[in-house]
Image 1 (tube, rainbow, N blue to C red):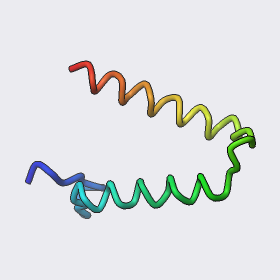
Image 2: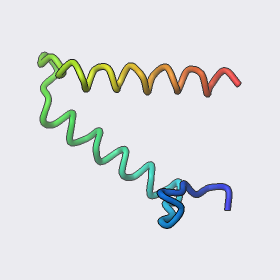
Image 3: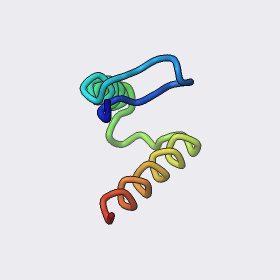
Length: 60
């Protein structure tokens, strides 16, 4: 099944569920962190790392 992510080799999460989880996290972050609020530095680092991974994946 190529549309599944494996977590510790035991749990399987399909792509639709993964996208729904990511969207829910994004909505909550947008609600809890105002547009003018600075993100904590660790969270900003993680977001920057995800953007880099997305750019690298998109260039293949």
